Length: 192
Image (tube, rainbow, N blue to C red):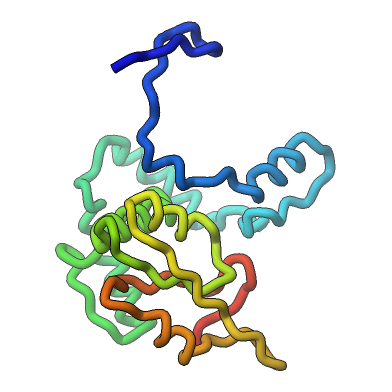
């Protein structure tokens, strides 16, 4: 393998995986970088809450650090956390999950999408993506060699809605996944 010198570090550079070629720069990140360089900007670009962490969560974090929870956890996350989440999910949705086999804790939603999509799709498969949607989902699908197929949401007088005829028409033998976010990013649309 031929390597070249990096102009930044003056060390040999290694070519990146060609699967990354499908990922386009994020327009929202470009906008955010401009905003971060400005003073007195109310940052709404990521959809991140401006509310501070609730005191009971901050206190629990401090207590966990004091109790020594500062080392690697099991790959799927602490069983006590997964159990608490399964109980909460059952209360909210009436669905029983096995915390030992059906829940995994990730560091972020993006990591969770990466893992889930990687576990379901093979190169050549298709994923239906309700759009408009957060661009990272379709990029992750493409990065793993599958094809994102956009299915536009229908704009009705009252709200956005799934066009079920268009969704059904988009299904092919290669379709393995339906990707949507609820509440939707960027629309705020909620699936009901």
